[in-house]
Length: 198
Image (cartoon, rainbow, N blue to C red):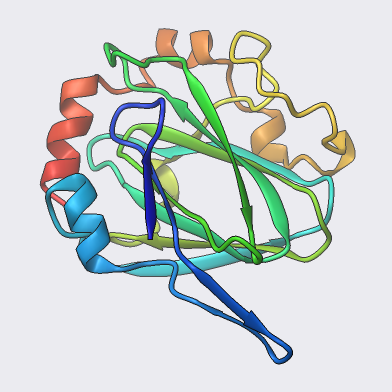
């Protein structure tokens, strides 16, 4: 397993070996020992596993969970291909406002660990691209927030997105500055404390 610390504090990618033959492939996108070695703690207790399927050109995000309670995520793409983005939304973070991009696909089996307070977005590059979310706790709609994925102040390179496929939620999402002004972003320390308690 290749583990890479990303340019957003607390975020990592995990890229396992992929074994291919004439029948298909086998891989293991999560290994507890590798995760614990990178973050010096075990993965949170899993409360929910969800997935979505997206057509090419679909842009989803930037999504995050209000803190408290906060929610970390472990995300991978078992089928298709996406440009995956993490955006640091934690006020006072040393990497606040920074974003990083990763190529996730069924071919590379790469997974991303998303810390509490870090937003997630992706742009599907192929039809029927699947994103799997491994999360603590359960879905509470009132806690699920978003920042505009087309906010020019953030500057995600998502020009290939099909604007007609953007959800109503993401179309109406505030900019990063508006989310901050409205008190929708949590502080870095609060997010780190919430993550440690997962």
